[in-house]
Image (cartoon, rainbow, N blue to C red; front, top):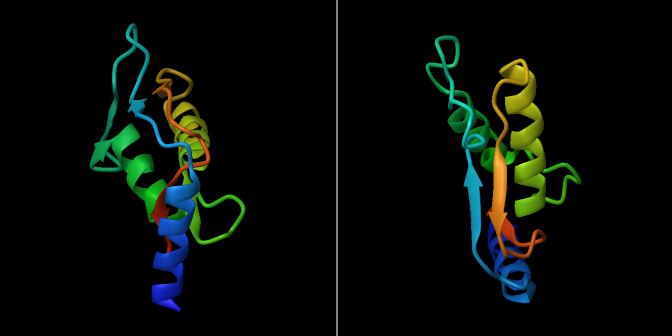
Amino acid sequence: PMFESVDLFYKKLAASGGGTAFLLSSKSEEYSLESQGLHQGIFSHFLITGLSGDADKNADKMVTLDELYSFVYEKVREYSGNLQTPVLAGDADRDMPLASIR
């Protein structure tokens, strides 16, 4: 099963349009906030948990760029009381897989 998920990941990656994505922690006029409770930056925390599987909205054992950005955007905005807004820039295929969940 593990090899099947890795194989599927590479097939979906090859089928994606590729490109370059920049996932930025905040808008230029905002600060990237740290959290004592999380022991790290708010953006970093949700980026890591999202890639670890929390962002897999459709439960297909794969985290796409769109799923990750949507998850990080929502969670960072909520946790920061709307003081920090992650930004997605670039020309990447938003269906491009970024992580395979085991």
